[in-house]
Image 1 (cartoon, rainbow, N blue to C red):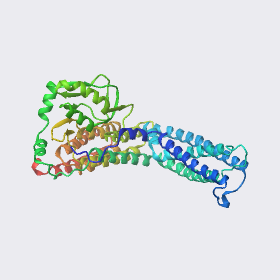
Image 2: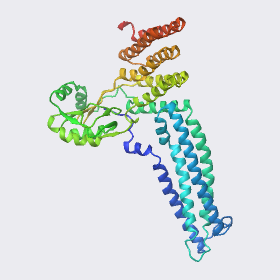
Image 3: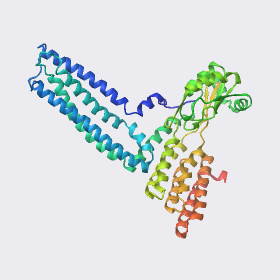
Length: 456
């Protein structure tokens, strides 16, 4: 089965979601730069090379004062700015959800900003220590001091960028649009556009691909061995290729009961293996191929981004916030993401070896379940709110235009029917109820038209 773009490695994703990796890299680079400039300064001190006259300014004491001022200013700015930023993000997370802080940590711009400041501090301290390296005195690292001053100017530019970046990133439209971009990226990764007309590689594979795994599923259910989870947590990453190789090695077929985004409990069944004798070997491999953690990620789990948008919407609809327009914005982006999914082929998670034999059957995605995850909670929170109900129906109609099968459209129509029933029970104003009924009628007519006369 083709997987489209290569999925990001979970280890790399874990490094991206830290505030130490990029700063550590920049500190190493800053140290390397200091080593180079220090060697040049030493060569100039022993008259092996000649530095430009505009670099040879001041003595060792004035250089020491400059470096002390730079180091003190940088570390103070880092402490104050990031403390205030964390406070602002904590307040913003009350409206956007706790994942706001995780997005801040994951942002490359924030990581680079912290790294640039810390690297400048480390460089200045190293340059300060080098002034007293020669006991006879008179050594002044002119080039290192000049580079430290240049880095200070860069820090000022980065500080202005950081303040503007944070002020923009915590604004509601930017937060929602950022989640929507993550959703689009996750959809492209998990449900890539496929060339349906492409022929199989050879005749042998064509026969194997024509075989359906239904018989294997029945055999696994009846005579398969159970594989248990090694530890509890949210399933963040599944090494499908690794499991396929393991299954071929032990000549077995694995059926996974969970997909990324599900919560698994240690000691509970997570897979089945046929034949039963291979279960123990597969269980050891599964412990390495399954990555669990305390939270969900977007790797192999596009529904996580939908849940983030839903969370912001239902927080906005709560009586404490009462921000209808935020919920409407979330619905617009949710409809965009579902439209993108509707255009893709949600294929079975069936993985085969080089000979075309089925080796791994993953937990399938369900389009109706995705639709329910996108609209159920918002519809329930929007009871008695005609504006939100109308926007849900408009969003359903927008998604319906991108659907490719009657089953998809039936799932959307079912949501529309639930919105209409909720409106009849909770909306007291007849004019509002008429507007909702009109929107539902348009959705029903659109789906009937897309179905075509042969299905009516």
